[in-house]
View 1 (cartoon, rainbow, N blue to C red):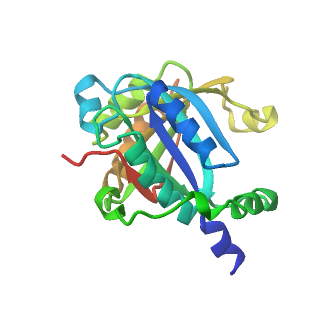
View 2 (cartoon, rainbow, N blue to C red):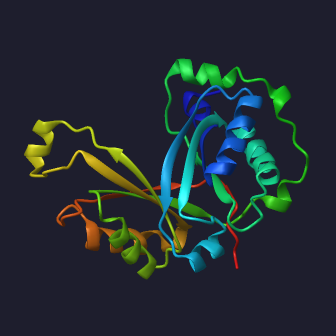
Length: 232
């Protein structure tokens, strides 16, 4: 197998759910002996009617990130769909992103995971979405997440999740580009259909781009598989 095929066989699994269900998800990951996963606190951005459409519930959120093999990721999504009842509005969403690169030790660790913990039940056609979607991530200064979502919803987005964090920058590089970047940051994650990607990204850039007070950067990543989003 070539190096490129080896890398592309891994996925980053992202789960956005309620704090209560995130505890069940964490127990699931431990039970399956998944070696690396991270849990972050976040806030949903959408009003209640939009949250009902997306099926991701109240505004307080937990985000769990996990790196796994592609074949195992598909099984995990199927099992999480059942164990966390992601078919019920308000319980959450989960999706996978292709992993572009990883160091050798991490890849060996993920390759060494036992297949005995992951058995296909043959029901993937019942729960896997065939709709092609992307994750848009906008990194902005604090206090601008509402403006980001206002622009995004005007371009077709239905909701998002905000993660609070800190920027780590090279002062020399920042000064070179004339950006007075704040250390505290917010990341707005939006899952949307691929056909809406450019419109949403352009709307966010115009409203909260690098030349605004928000000093936002916007990127998108292709979603491999997604569960928990209703299509009605």
